[in-house]
Length: 293
Figure 1 (cartoon, rainbow, N blue to C red):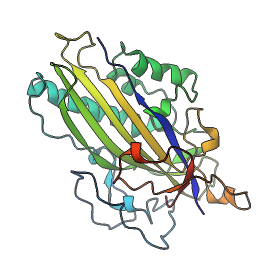
Figure 2: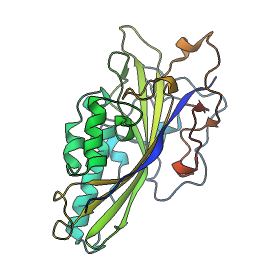
Figure 3: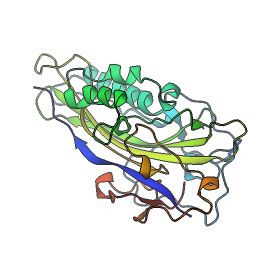
């Protein structure tokens, strides 16, 4: 039985300015860091084991992925685009900090105010930080905080344990003008979840993949907030989140116990949320089903 997969679309191309503990219950050898786009989806089992509260990544390819921030490796900096090596290094560190604050911070995942993520973004950018702040106050499909943040309704679900599995890569190059660097991040985050009610024991997983491009500008050459990140493109797609509830600012994982006896869900194309072999722009936009979680 497939579970709903929601695509957070459209791709938003914005204007430019003028630590976790080890996973439990697995002896899987960790994968080497991803250095290039994979050529295929990770292999799966015909009948994978179901996740449990003790082993929330059981039956998932993510069992061999890195834990949390350890899966976000920063490449070695070099001078580029008129930016010094030190400026590039700081831009890369800030990008990792943004990914951690928006996708791994426990308070953010619980739907709290993402103060650290907002701090890293340029307050002068209307369709970046300002738009995100509007979406947090009044979420909708036109200003959705899920474009950048992974958030769950704490009244509905909670993250199981302290580990979110992470896999992806980060690259950088010259920006759109002299005195700028552009950082591209492509990461998948796997969240194990159970219902918030006491005694809940079914575990499901929601998988979120993000392609994020940010830029840092030399304040001597461009009007910008020194050291802040400017969002260039944010794209994301989530697996196992109820499509019917788009626009409320939360991901809504579905549980098999709630789907028994219900009419079939979305009839769109099936997708493997662990498949990182294609750009998000090449994937269908409509709501469909996931082949696994």
